[in-house]
Length: 345
Image (cartoon, rainbow, N blue to C red; front, side, top):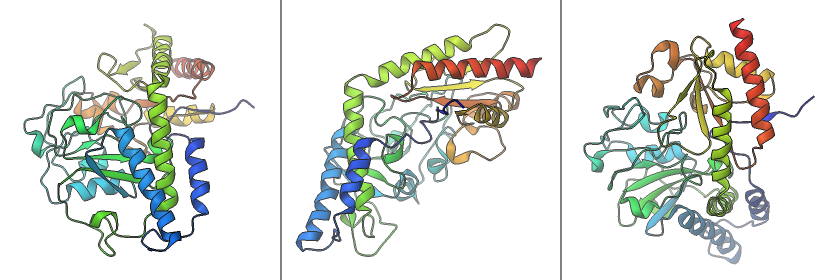
């Protein structure tokens, strides 16, 4: 039996060896990071090292890194009760706290009227489309772009940003809210006053250590051009699937996108059906955001971009990573074409 091919990096990236090693080492540090004795200081030192690693990788030296359970919690901490304008292409974790009022064009671009009262994602998880961030946003969801795109939080002038460890090869269950230094926010989880009083509760030292190591490794890969090779593989995938006899649509192909993301629409072939067929053939892909998978409905992102029901519910997302090989992409193309042709016949 041939090995399975993992093409769902936007849902979660495989754990990096650097993150695994940092987590294993952190397991032997027994102290509570709030304790003042040597064991506690050792645990606190791991947290502060990771905080510096994440800040450096994100270009956020002029900001506070507040560790939370993930980007979903970070969005709630940043947005609850603030009346933030959002677009319907935002991830559900952000959309839940916004008004969905901002217009989106056919190319996925969002029009922002008042940045100071707006949350705008850096890149979309389903389509890979990258936004041009205006200066001074209230919040930006940088979860998908972090580690894949050159960026610096400090340069955007944004008040806050969301990031998550498992999207760049860190562990699941840990993320951060990035806050411009000097900005006050109201804690939602209260207690011992950890994380500079923004998020109480004993810190997840093991997860935080893995996050820091993953962020540092991701920054090195980005600098070394790892994602340039991934972009070439994505181009190979899309070019290989182009066929005048099969009307597959490549969403966002004319837009600036993440280097690894291909959103494919084959009208009349339900996305969930495609995912199941490809799973049986040995390929892991998604029908939209992983957080909304299993829900039988058309993509809100594609609907906002003007795709109709016969298209928006017939999309899959293929997302690659630095360890994806050309042979794996070629196998996927071969299988997808075979399944697509079999369906037509």
